[in-house]
Image 1 (cartoon, one colour):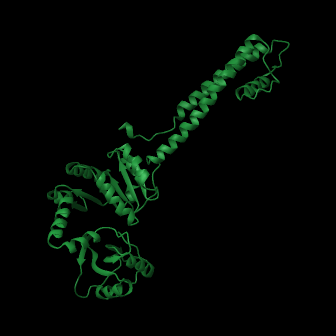
Image 2 (image 1 turned 30 degrees about the vertical axis):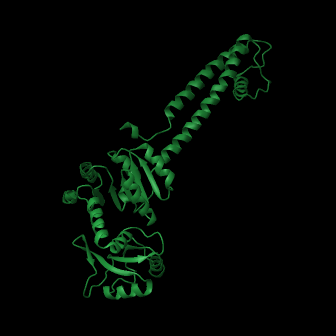
Image 3 (image 1 turned 135 degrees about the vertical axis):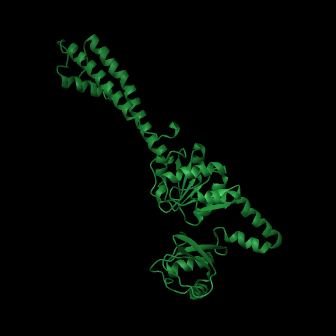
Amino acid sequence: MSGFHIRRFNRKKAIITVLALVLGYGALLVTMLSIESKSPNSEMRNIKDAIWYLAETLTTVGYGDIIPVTSWGRVIGLIFLVSSLGVYGFIIGQIASFMNTIQENRMLGFNGTNFKNHVVIIGWNDFGQSVISHLIGAGKQVAIISKDRASIDIIREYYTQDQVYTLYSDYNNYELLEKSNIRDASIVFVNLNDDTEKLVYVINLKKHFSSLHYVVTLDNGNLKSTFQAAGVMYTISKNEISSKLLASYIYEPDVALFSEELIAYAHEDHEYDMKQVIVKDNNPFAGMYYDKAFFDLKESCNVVLIGLVKSVDGKRKLLKNPEGSLKIDAGDYMVMMMDGKGAERLRKQFHIEEGI
């Protein structure tokens, strides 16, 4: 997996080159001083004069206050003069290499990200691209991990760095996956191409990141229970969803249109979708009965409360439009249907945001 190693500036090579130049110039300088100091017409009498001559020659300043007068001294001076071009080329090349390394490491994600409560998508394809558009529309930050170098360039063209972080990595390089701040992610979407590949990968991934929540899409819906037994929290069968939606279009097309709108993020104020918000301790709905919250939300925000999620024995339980006297507790999630205007009223009036 050497192709996924972090690119680093070759400091060792640069240091060795600099030392070789220093030793080479030092030897030539000492030789030149030894030759020139024996000539009565020479202006180079000590090591300070020699260093000054070397400095003004390498920098191509050429004051002319100190010049070699012997034949061999001039040969060495010519070496200094010609080699100064190579020195400049080396310095410029090292600076360019250093800057390119910094830029490429940042683009490939090797510098890491400080995203938190974000979505990590492992694997990139057309389906992942359609998912990310809805996540960004909902205000979620996304970290995309891909082993396809070309896809990193494409993603960077479409999304800003404050929306999407990209990491070029082999999927089994778990140490490098830490760069995506995966441990602080709200959920990990394993977006590989084959169901068997997804299952094996999830099992291995949970050995390193056991506390994370995982979601996968399946081509074979019969594998749902297998993935859930492997520790996947949410399994979605693409064929099952599309077949249900198609059947709905056939016998109740208006309901199908509304359903399709509800399961997507509302980009316009007149569009509807379903959102869930957590009830915190300071939330005005904490301690309120469900039926009263239903009427209050409808009256004040034109938001319809359609369900409540409670934690029962450490597991999430969705109560759909519950009957009776049910109290909303801190830590519950309210599931609501609303348009864009209703979502804005909800934020302004109750200061709550959607999502887990």
